[in-house]
Length: 219
Image (cartoon, rainbow, N blue to C red; front, side):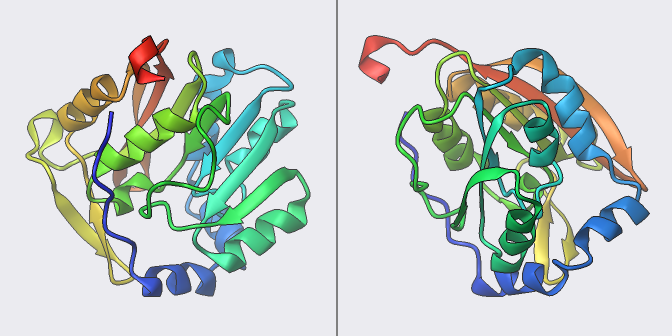
């Protein structure tokens, strides 16, 4: 499946993330945000020690660290240098790269990883089609992808796209669940799990999908 590349994230967004990198882990704990733990728990049955995982938007490594402790070989990519420095200092990631995930293709070969995770990132991405298609390119058949999207105020019937709010000058997109489900199918994934969860007054969906076997002409 070929999809047009999404627009590149404004440079100011990476700079914004760098400014709060040092206090990020403490902020997540104070806010009682457990989305990383939710994704890990939902996807645990699909992963095995020794397998590889790419964290898309790894940040300081809060999600990826859980998989590393379960014995997976973790790589990560993020656009914020300060976030990557903090993640690197934790010492569990085999490979960390700085790259804007809205600039496609990503700097990895096809079928490079067994699994992928993306926690707390996609509500900053307006068009998820290129993102999911590129994730599918990176995964081996049978690989799992665990990710979060923001729940729209209009619920299941929400139009697409929805600009839900703004955070630090960045638009926050609450994607229609029907839109996400359609993209999952279009990109060759099968949906295994979906769970609505809450962080303060905000609501998110945690998804786990698995990449189906590719046909010969899709290799």
